[in-house]
Image (cartoon, rainbow, N blue to C red; front, side, top):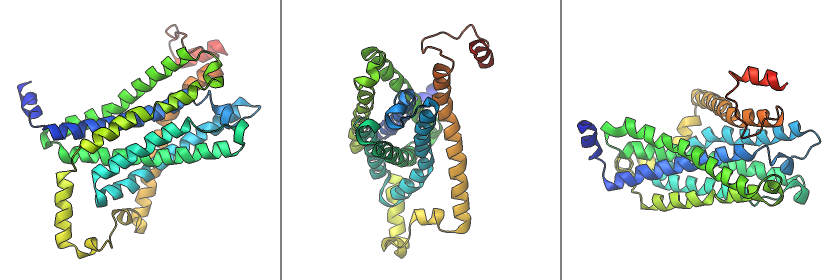
Length: 306
């Protein structure tokens, strides 16, 4: 305990601001992605109307795939931006981007209003959401690790990632509040689902405010100054970190492999949280509040319901 306290004393006020800002940004990321999963089944007919509800669900889950596929791309894009222009700038831009995208989702017109333009606009917003979300981790986590004392980096890495879980919790609380305020069909007919997306701007504004109070990574500043003195091509803007990632044939293969692996991993992760509750509610007619403690496993539950 004494050793931990001594290490804790090494963290300055400026470092704490950076760590908290990164944690808050990651929380907002988790908040948005899980929030969408909570209401995805409810709004499927608003953007992809069909006589077969299953087709509507598959279509709107496909828009979620767009978000997950773009995350590695956003990480590469904004990681490169952060290398050239600073971690702090990249973090503020990405947090502003996906908090705005969350808010704008609540303003989207539905199929009944503008027809096919509705799903197109939704897909474009989810496209942007994936880019900015991937960039937030690429900037915020790097900024924290470059700023934190070496003895605390392992602990602080875990702390920053815990923000994702906090985002899940926050989304759950907001969702339950809105379900109570807009019970039954009123959640859709009276726009309760829109208000949920509007709330995404609140933690976003807080994260941006904290971000502006943060200092740039000293390690990044030192490396930039060093490179400016030793690398004339960097000074003239002839090199690009992103070009190093996808410039060569071997580099492109590695990037594509990373994109496939991470997209598949994230898709399996989020569809488990999103598809399984939808499957249990829509196809096994299990109420959200119905206890399942009497069933030993999911197979037994399905057998009883079927």
